[in-house]
Length: 392
Image (cartoon, rainbow, N blue to C red):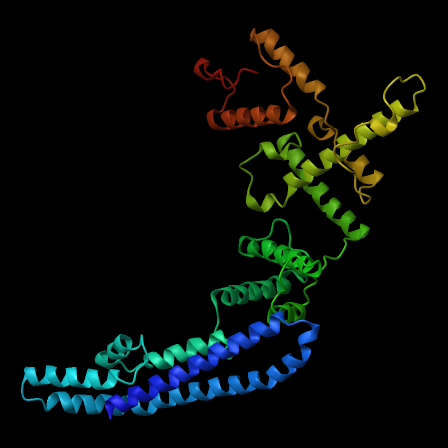
């Protein structure tokens, strides 16, 4: 009777494997079908439904047999082993049982069945576990994959972000640490969506699309209004003025020991607007050269355009606020820095020093010296350190 139970499970699992293989082949044909094969595809639709029901029925029988007969099989095996008079007889009986049970099994199932049988585990048999795998492969059981689990985790994080900030249309550039993975997630979903529309990427799974849209996710990022740009610019300018009062300059990138709560993307703001100012000045020079009748330069079409394009939202009021800071680094005036370095070369008799030192390097040196004064309480740099402070 023990052999009969496992022979029955092996037969059911073998039939389920055949039905699953046939179902996969039909689905593959449906994917490759063209408009001329629509009649044949309609015929296969009923067969697909029949095979799916058949696979589900085999799965129910395998799991039911496993639940009902597992305890009975173990009890019979225990009685058979305990009634054996000697170890030799026990091994002979086990060998006879294995030979009898293996006769009806398909190839490749003997060892796994006996492993499950010898351990006497209370878990599902090897056939029930394999039946679960077949159901998942055929799409009849939604087994959570690692990718789905990762998506659910990020979706939960996205909900928390929406509750805290009110919108998930655009993730902040410098969010709290736990929300950093959402930046790439939002960007990759929008990129995949656009790629699918252009026929370059596979579609996003429908359950994920539904979950994101229910949360209020936009596949195209909403354009920022002028009022929002003005509000953001005013907030960053207030932080920049406070920074200038604290450190005496606007070179945010030179100060590396600022607290995290003071950062708030200020370095990116300074770099971007400094580029806008340079582009504006360059465009002014280009316009002056083009309007000069005496200029014997190349044609306008052959001129090299400005390196950075100034956005439409960057207004003249913003430009005036930046210039009102009267900061050499922000305004891009490097002449003052060059004069300072020339004086340092003359007074310190330092020969061969490059006078084209940029302003960022100058402010980094200044911050290093500020740290020296803060640490030692004075600005008298020892001779052994003069290589680091040659400009003094």
